Length: 465
Image 1: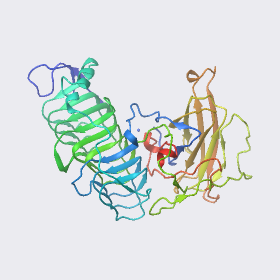
Image 2: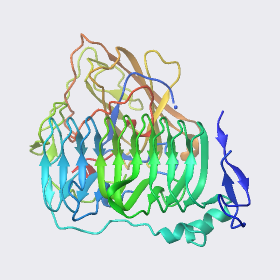
Image 3: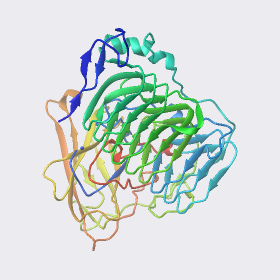
């Protein structure tokens, strides 16, 4: 049973009324973990499970603003994935192992990869710059613009002093302005909210589900402590949707299996945990790619992504075990049988331009479908996307479903298409890529137990350059 915030007319810790405030009183399990990349045939839209996806200025997932702090960006953990660009106004240190950065790395002073089996594009040295996006704390104080909007909605909380949430399953709603420190230590906290604090913010509970309420901003600490973690995220198995902002201190992300669907903008940013994902990309392909290098479609870790010449992708043969359904209005797959670690290319032609196609999967031991993500059908009406299965995928049949609701189109009925892929240990591993589909970096999100918004990264080849 959750503890939902109740309306009140006094601020926490205040002796007089200030504004209306609220006072305190996972999707299906599955063993197959998928990474799906929308390609040039389908521009990806925001995952359906993210209520207020954070904007990604210039595609930056991580930005460290300090020009003086050592290890301004430090990826000390292992098995982490960053989808989006990474920039440091000082240095970048990769001291962990088996980390993946799918996006351009830029730095001012030094780049050092002291870990093992990290995978990333060639880093570029550049001048220091200002944050591509900033927040003004005055906007969230009682008379600020964001505060007034939240007050009008009956969703503004002014906390005089510290804000401590220690009761499991607490539901937070709206905008919270805290004059002291914030400590979210309970498990299973959830809600759509923004917390802006003058002091440190410490999130240590597990199985959290946070979505930004105001300005796509999730957590903002205005504390001035450049060498300290003023926003600290620990715990495990949590989802954080929105920008985390710490302009005068460190953002420290530790714990395990935590997912960040939004930018991490701090004076310094340290990823000390394991199996973390930070996903922040625009969903519209850029007009011109910033680099002509195209990463190879390989699952083998290397020091950097190795460019291939344009047009070197190979055609995928059709075999006897392929799907024999040649229906022009179907959902076809290049192979229907493959070993764990296989790459499957799915194609859906003759869809209404501009419609929203929801993709879902049902595993071998599941009775229901789990929604994975949504793709926008481009002009021409053909979607092509890639599914990568992990090396430890559970054997069995997986049904992939594409659905378009009638209220998005002029059609009188729902469009629904399905296809099935089977994972078998003794089957060939499918690693070919069709000739018309550009090669893109293919990575696995090694998550466990549930599908959530960050289980799949959706992008275009240009935005991965």
